[in-house]
Image 1 (cartoon, rainbow, N blue to C red):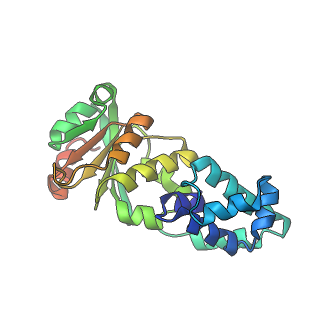
Image 2 (spheres, rainbow, N blue to C red):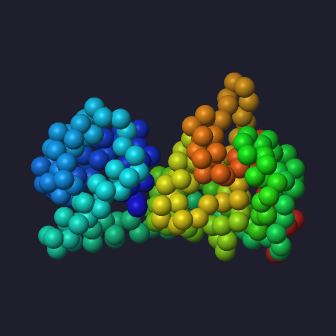
Length: 233
């Protein structure tokens, strides 16, 4: 999942696919034979001549590399497992509420602006929140550890800080679902969004397709945490 996440989030997914194939020391022909596709198909993906691969293509590729490595003793995977271990504690901070609160009440509390799915928001109960450093969690936290974002329950608000346009956090949540099968009650993008700096349309599309209400807020993070702390245990 870590490798798949890196490829899917990369600005050059074909180049990232090639990098991992070379790390595993697998030739294009060998990979193509394992996947039962032509070598030109692999070459086209790596060279950017095919459209960006979907998560199913990426998943097949990564699983193929792992399976091929297993036939060789699994040396690459064992080394990568060591490299991927790290302390993600500075990337996010989880908090639990004493009892569930209405998602709409939480939005009012933080002076939030609902970007999509307001009707869905009315149905949601929130039992906690996680403040996430979007840059650190995307670059440093392995995808298979994304479940730790959810604390004791997925029925929570994920608050992403240091957000540029909202696309990367939504992609991260979508990819994380392949390893956790969980989704939050709502996603909050912290930052100053307006007509000159709107939320990325792709981020909104992902939120809508995943049926996750999307909210923005521009209040200071200290003010936000102080407001939400009133609900904590």
